[in-house]
Image 1 (cartoon, each protein chain N blue to C red):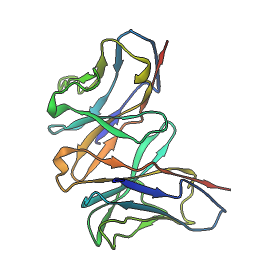
Image 2 (image 1 turned 90 degrees about the vertical axis):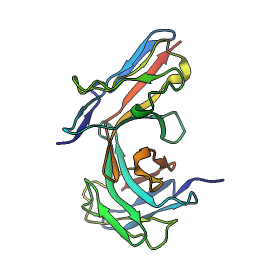
Image 3 (image 1 turned 60 degrees about the horizontal axis):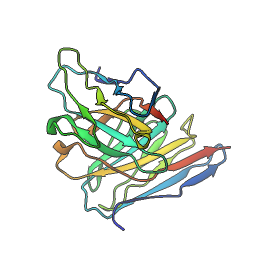
Image 4 (image 1 turned 60 degrees about the vertical axis):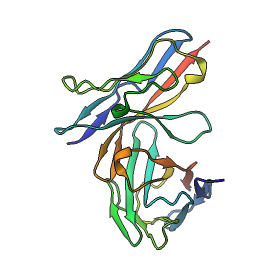
Length: 107
Length: 114
């Protein structure tokens, strides 16, 4: 079955510490993966897409086909990074989302 | 203000009643979606529509119905057949270029069944 797994419901780090939000996927084809973010009182929005190989707000994510992973990383967390993060897999005409990880950055 | 508008933001319903959630977009997007967001379960797809007058069931369509009579509108009806309707509902839209993978979301509607 096509599935996106985010094993951590909550990740708490201190400001300035490195962050890694884990995402694993189950899909036999060539995956297209995305990270979405929802800040407090804001709409869910696209953060980055793996195909662009971009860095947004200091975050990067590398697709590892061998490990079927697409972890989101940032070397130095900021308090404003606190939010809910969702990993998503693109399928025909829709996105499949993971269960989300709440990132809490402590001062 | 461009984007997706969902209404109402909060809705209370008695058991056995149907309720309709509104979703309107002025982005000229062809595709629209309804997701349900529950704690610990992430976003689950209810229905989606790629074009006017056409829609498909998502992963959890039972107890829900939709219509797509206009490009701008994609209302969701939560029927009395939905066993656990209390949830946060998100509407989204995207261009016909599905390769972008970018969905634009509304602010959501929280439905509580009393």
